[in-house]
Length: 96
Ligand code: FES
Image (cartoon, rainbow, N blue to C red):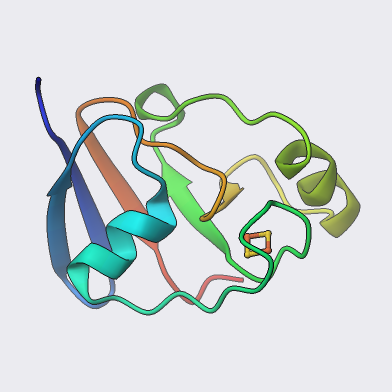
């Protein structure tokens, strides 16, 4: 299985995780703190800018409706609900 590289900026931390791992779990593995609440895609506390979209599983409800309610653009995802799938994923902290 090919691991997925997840980079966290601006802290400059990198972690390699299995496909299907959430961004929040990757952050915890890397020792990076992302403020979070419900861990179920409902509260929106853990929104981060993350790219590229091709490296991520598509968003589904409740994440999608929470992002819509918050009025965030397509570059944002909820860390607890976003699963990395392949390649290199870049997460920008502190953009929200
Ligand atoms: S922790 Fe509440 S939406 Fe992710």
